Length: 330
Image 1 (spheres, one colour):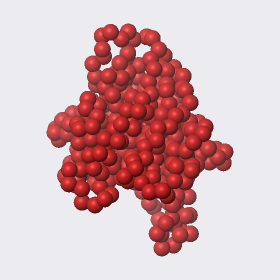
Image 2: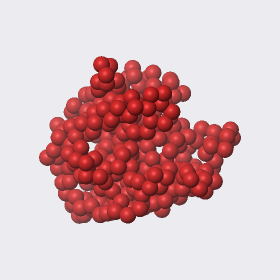
Image 3: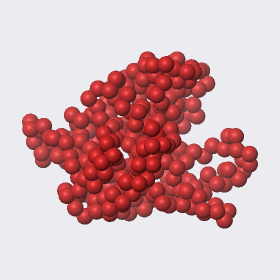
Image 4: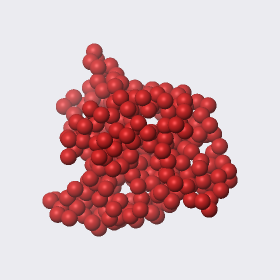
């Protein structure tokens, strides 16, 4: 199913995605379809919303009912993941390391009924997705993308992916810049206020298992700088937007350090105490603000996600916690 969807997407989506990405900045009211807005909420007031990021770590529910190994997710595990999401208070989440459409469909239908999702179902198992409570927000899908997926009988919306054709140079070779393409999700609150999330999962800096650790370290460093340069260009693209825009996700690095933070042209919200990645006692997960129009933001908060059955004294699973912030849209 994964390979079939990838083939169909390669054939049907590039033109629609490119045109939608080009037009989205000029006439969004013509390009997007949005969910119904509850009549009892009056547009114009301030609305409170909680957004966040969660790397669920190799989240694959395809063998949920018949686990093959102790590492396979069970129904009990999936229920605990859903409980952590609800406990976080998040209304909209950017998720990383998702197997794909099959896992999300099963997870939502059985453990988060009523919630909705949208993502980029690739042939891999580390896909990016958005997950949201439709009572709080609606996903605004480009009409061209909606038409394309309707033709392909795909049920969930398709976000816009960035930088699919970009590469970087390393020691005389051109290499794909992003294995996991950043995804853009445009949302509208129940009261009609718009905001945008860009979901990212940057390259890990680990070199474990590499035959040439020093070369792998150099390659990771060059690739990391190239990916950050791409994100900085997104900051410039959205400059002056009258809509709040966030770049959030797994940055795979400690950007609490001034020398790392200086590589980005926008601020990152992070935990002031505690760790988003407990195994290394560090922070890898951040919520960046690249357009803060009509916005007030609270401090970053953490929700523990460790599942006892899947963890050991030295290694937690999932290994990332949920990081959220409360935003007030005016």
